[in-house]
Amino acid sequence: MTRAVVLFTSDLRLHDHPPLRAALAAAEEVVPLFVRDPAVHAAGFDAPNRGAFLADCLADLDASLRRRGGRLVLRGGPVAREVGAVAAESGATEVHMAAAVTGFGHRREERLRESLGAQGVVLHVHDTVVTAVAPGRVAPSGSDHYAVFTPYFRRWSAERLREVCPAPRAVPVPDGVRGEPLPPRPAPSLLSPGLPAGGEKAGRERFARWARSGMPAYEDRQDDLAGDATSRLSPFLHFGALSASELVQRARAQGGPGAEAFVRQLCWRDFHHQVLAARPEASARDYRTRHDRWRTGQEAAEDVAAWREGRTGYPVVDAAMRQLRHEGWMHNRARLLTASFLTKTLYVDWRIGARHFLALLVDGDIVNNQLNWQWVAGTGTDTRPHRVLNPVVQGRRFDPRGTYVRRWVPELRDVEDRFVHEPWRLPEDRRARLGYPAPVIDLSDGLARFRHARGRD
Image (cartoon, rainbow, N blue to C red):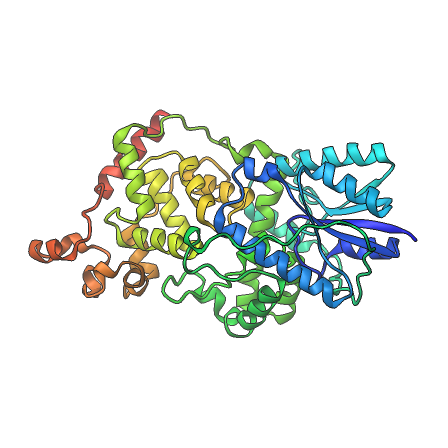
């Protein structure tokens, strides 16, 4: 009886899963395995919101496998040790897994390859499981990756994607392989109250609904803060409950400007993956332009606290930060303007903001979180590193009636539209009754400081 192990990592699904398909083709029985790695906890990657979503994904994956005659084997401990033990217990001669992108993932693959090789077990690493186009598959002449999105998008769009593979009808799992109970969700008190449910089933249902009702208008409505018209699929993509390759192909098959705009966003995700795969140090260090004059000290710390708590005095910034705390998610346009406010108006190190986002975002991952923060901060791949997003202008443009602001900042619920993004313009007696803070900084002062600091760097 031939056997293989499928190590699930950031690919918690059965549909369009090349490692599982390859293992089923090579062996008569497979062991679907997920390892709870203590190194993830030590690195601070297991924030409660993501822990809850992960628990949902694992429960859904196990249920799907059981409907096909199998089960998910869960183990806890160092990955190389546990994978080797499962291979030995089951008599497996092969292990299949998705290719990693981050330095953390690459080191895990190296340890696995070395330890499994010593056992005589072959490790097969499959690309295009996490991304639609594998990092490094397309590259400009003279470089190992694209540093600018538009030329990458052109090459990426011309790539032929692999065929989407269906979920298997049966997954035969050998008896006698020890597993641990599935993890529970963290205590509700640790979670954002509006956290969504995770899992492949929930993700596929969400995409099907949004493809019908949201995708056709996505090109026009993707930046509408109040309309909340984005797909909200990022958590499912982060955990691999949905396949990026499948989403690209289904969107292209549907067609239309909305589908094209959605595919472009999926390409942005692949773009960041190929950047970090080539420059893994960019998860912690400035990618392109180094800045060493970020504000520090007590005043900066107080500004950061106001930003985190949604009390900067700029309504659209505060609304976004309160949404993040409540839902563990934030609209993409809101992510851009809150990051710009911290790094350019307050002139605070992007790493401080990135850590706060990673502590709360259910879709928070090193690739997209860190590189998006660098893009906004002007240290990354943005070709206009000195652009500053004005929160008043952004609010008027993307939340013209103040609906988004009023949803998350109830202090301003009764403020007229013309004042909702500039409550400091209200008469003094009305401002005092609102209970809403004054701006932490005048925007013109923040802009002048930014330009002066960048001129010195």
